[in-house]
Picture 1 (cartoon, one colour):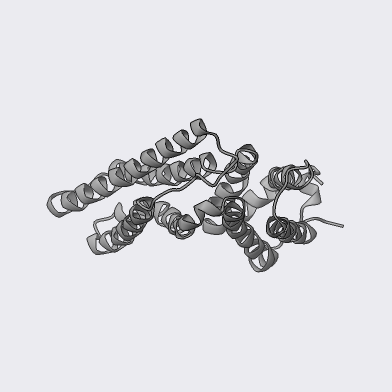
Picture 2 (cartoon, helix red, strand yellow):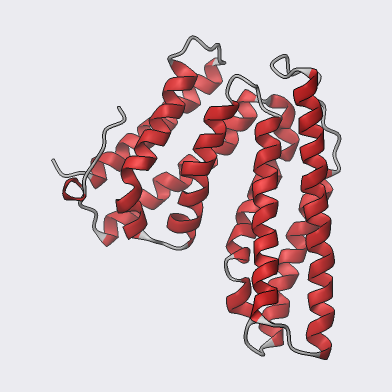
Length: 252
């Protein structure tokens, strides 16, 4: 249930956070990708893109740190990893999207999905061009910290535009719930907890995370919306993971 918790209800040691909570949250974020594919089998060709974008988010958060010094070797190595991921994402984005089998998207929605895919591709091309410009500029002069921050911001926009494309291509019965879950659970958990290792953020946001998860679960399983047995099983697994997190985190 979507209970609200105060700080006096929460007691998490550093060991519990690293040993139990983070692994369960990591599994839930990975389950989200599986949930998308389960609800929308026609999007399975983008399975690897979720992994690429997870890795890109980690690199994006360290662009300024790795490149603001004069250590070009360190920066070049970091940017080479970014470039590889962008190339992989571009390759995946060129694959043909076939939404004709999705009976829960009307013609207008399918057009919006296609338009969003083009916007996502354009952001990837923009990042590729900017990356090459920064690489050339580093060879002849210094690159400002502001320019690296702008590049990092563009990488974040790529992840957001991919997410919007995924939602707009999803079964329209679940778009609002999936969008809320990604925005209020998957994205912040990945950034602040899995990458930045921020235990305090988890403790402060446990109520929001709890409400967000329970809303998704209820909307998909309790509102007479027909979903597959596979999806039901996946949601049950996610629910057990979240309950295990609560058991560890809350005082008796």
